[in-house]
Length: 94
Image (cartoon, rainbow, N blue to C red; front, side, top):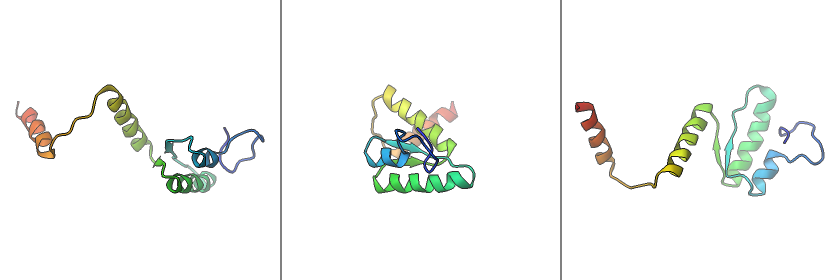
């Protein structure tokens, strides 16, 4: 796959085309420099238009990856926010 806007082989697929086609569930776009910023703008706009989640920092991408891995490993459960902090507070007192 080539970068958006870069000269590419005719058979290469553009990131915006992939997003538009529904083949992308999550975009991680961390542009650096002037050219990539313009590309990033097109990618982020396509993600927004097609309701695809878009992450724009490396730290957020790492947190998302950790969350996805956690979700795959454990069934989610619902609990009150107060219970979460009460449990954390109990651990601090030990």
